[in-house]
Amino acid sequence: MSFAFPEGFYWGTATAAHQVEGGNVHNDLWLIEHVPESLFPDSSGDAIDHYHRYHDDIGLLADLGLNMYRFSLEWSRIEPEEGEFSIAALDHYRRMLASCWERGITPMVTYHHFTSPRWLHRRGGWAGDDTPELFARFCERATRHLGDLTGAACTLNELNIAAILESNSYFDSEDIRELPMVLTTARELGIEPTQFVPFIFATGQKSGEIMLTAHRRGYDAIKAGPGTFPVGMTLGLQDIQSVPGGEEKAAIAQREINDVWLDGARGDDFIGVQSYSRMRYGPDGLLPPPDDAEVTQMGYEFYPEALEATIRHSIAVSGAPVIVTENGIGSEDDALRIEFIRRALNGVANCLRDGLDVRGYVHWSAFDNYEWIYGFRPKFGLIEVDRTTQARKPKPSARYFGEIARSGRLQ
Ligand code: BGC
Picture (cartoon, rainbow, N blue to C red):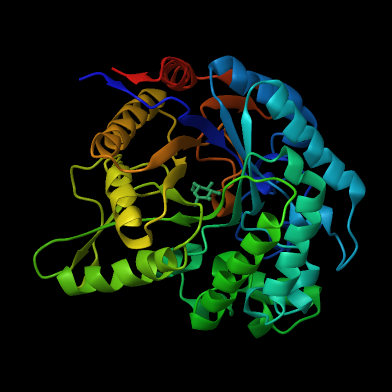
């Protein structure tokens, strides 16, 4: 059944600075990527050189028919040493914002997307009592320079990332401190391994409180202006399901992965919903994908219906309007990506039919890019990039998504 999306609905794609810019040498992840014991298969290196090619890249997104672009500021470029702000770096992001408006695209800015300046670790990283204050000062300084051109803002990307990784048993927060890669990185930073708390490993209650406080302080700093745009946080939300006997484990996961964070989004202008798959629980805990399921390059189940469930759950818990700030799949099979987008958008349409306040859908990602500890292998992009020539080539999924954006209709 055909569905018409509301007038003014945002249709976008997203990237994050470290994954596309290249040359982010001042941040903590660059360091981890380069220690001899690194488990990262690739260096982010030049990434896709979006730092220099942003103008044409934004033009490409506009040509596809999109009206929103979500990208992140690289804190460590803007404040490479504590308290030392780079006007040149701020000007760079100002030019990006201007390029968006020139092409009829509303820019959504994320102030922190996983990477942090190296110096923050000498102040305790994401377990440091001063971190919310330091983050708020960065938000204040960046907004002063960029706020008049900003269309929407996310404070922190996925405050619950460490909670997700831990509950997926990707890591145990104690074991991680023993990894040779972590020991060497801490040594290079001049801190004890136990004091090394990068954002993506920041588990536990203390870090959770620090992140939520940083969000609140950042929100206030950004709202102080200039600009009058909406501000929220983004969360990696999981569609938590159970099979008989798994209800209790599922309820714990629901609380720890989703709800404690959604509670923290109450009163925000929007909640950035990011959905990739579901998590199913049995009596012994997390279950692997069903035998007949399609599995993506990230190892999780192809399950686009998770988006509808997470939107409904987010609104029920936080009460905040939703912008879908990420949704996508890592796959070489672009026909599968089209299928994913179609089914995910069908879920968004169902929410809108029920009167839920959903204001936009931003697909992850605009380009194939640097997928953190997975390196460049997973392909999340609507646009393919040849990393030798840096040539961009829209995939059929980019045209498919662009057509929906242009017409505002899902067939
Ligand atoms: C992150 C992105 C990442 C994507 C796909 C999200 O958790 O915000 O940086 O590339 O998932 O794994």
